[in-house]
Image (tube, one colour):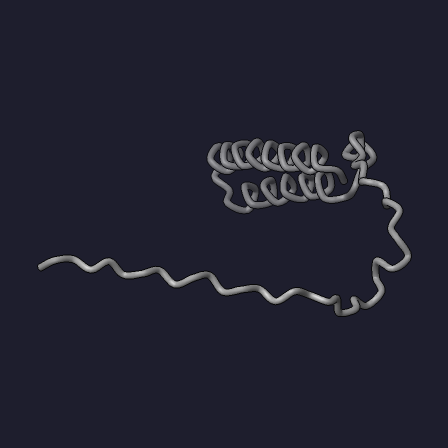
Length: 101
């Protein structure tokens, strides 16, 4: 699933759950049945699960393109040998200015 497919899946999931929450509340209120309300909401969550969780081909319309492997020198992964380095001279110390008191 690509990034745009993930976003679309999330939108489908949220839309389905909210719509079924409203429908289940109204059915439960009209018929006075908590059981009917919970069964309707559970069916909505199950439907949202079936719509959004599997990696349907519809969610793969924008495939990711990765960079190709660049050619590397053969010794890229070889252990580094110690090179002759020149010693670094320390920076001169700053002189403190004397103030007349």
